Image 1 (spheres, rainbow, N blue to C red):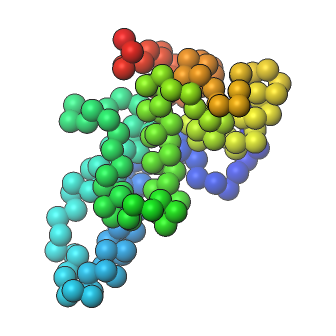
Image 2 (spheres, helix red, strand yellow):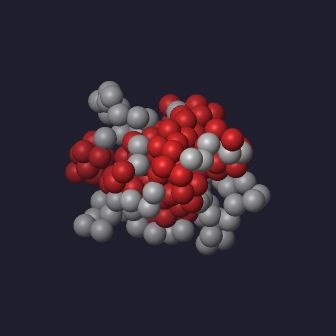
Length: 169
């Protein structure tokens, strides 16, 4: 097991709480911008944003897309927090990075130690240590999707226990 960390852990997050928090952060940010033009953000229907955040979080945690999504889309996060992810709140970055990591594995792409760490709830250094010990093969360009899925499945990460890429079947 990895050392305890004060960082956000993907699997420990409640989807509703994540959506509530991101909605609250988005409203606060957009309210600042809206004051300039005299617009009341509180009157905006936020159901779609909340649902998009909840769906992205659920996908990041367990995989599987709803019938309305073909790819995990952080578009709602871009709209709320801007295109520069450097300015996003840490929670939004975590959800977006984890969803992208899962998507790349499903698509058959190589993934980094950081991506594996996000999905496994470990620190990136711990993943690298496990690779040095022979638990997984981590090359200079990352890990193959098949190796990543096997390793994540061996750790019991949801969505990888019975891994079969939905894109390459």
